[in-house]
Length: 93
Image (tube, rainbow, N blue to C red; front, top):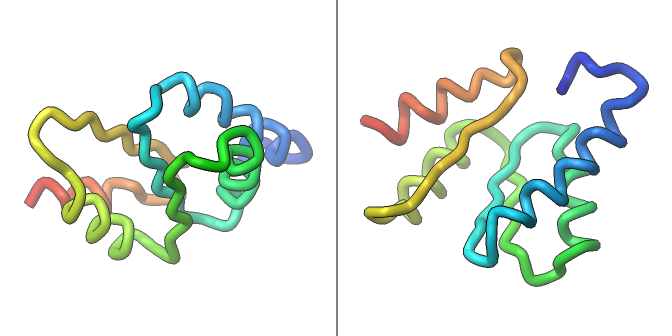
């Protein structure tokens, strides 16, 4: 979504409804400057949702590893330029 130009803020904000449909036990971990829009929209729509806007891949991987338990589902999503495979490589090790 980094490549969306003038629509990028609106499209990031629109993701909030899809995230909220995932259920009440959803925890949202975000990295990147543009994710501030999604975080803001989620907090507005559901002030009780768990949101952590982190400074980088290492912090995200650390928080994921500390909180993942058997049966959890983890979705890692990001523009190719966000290099989310760094998080995946860290948590699967």
